[in-house]
Amino acid sequence: MDGDKIILGMDIGGTNMRFGLIDKDCRLSAFTIKKTRLILDCSDPVLTLAGCVKDYCREHLGSRLPDAVALGFPSAIDRSRRIVCSTPNIKGLGDNLPVADIMERELGVPTYINRDVNFLLFYDTYFHGLPSHAT
Image (cartoon, rainbow, N blue to C red):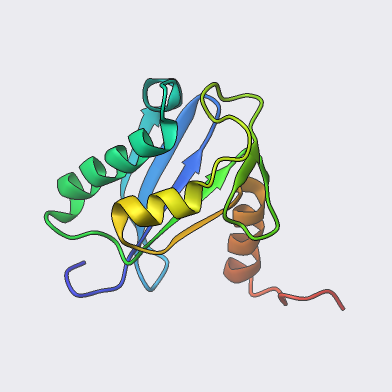
């Protein structure tokens, strides 16, 4: 993946978090699963998550960071797609956390957040060649 643009995609679930690197051809590599509570059940879950991302990148990308990070949450997300409003099933992800801003500050790369189901819909739309608008 050297030289290619890559995105770190993450699915933050109530039980597990899934990490994977996605290249420009939508190929997945370095797929990893970690227990959510071991990372996010702490006093500052977003900073801890940023540290986890750095560790993952060191392991799979060496000194490089991805070109962007995309995080899917089982949460209510604000309209700007910058703030996790509420995640009742994950202890530590309290109300109105500016996840995208904190991650961008800590990692220095663009960070995108959305509801996990929306990312699945975007993927299905792309993979199946469906129109991106309602007719």
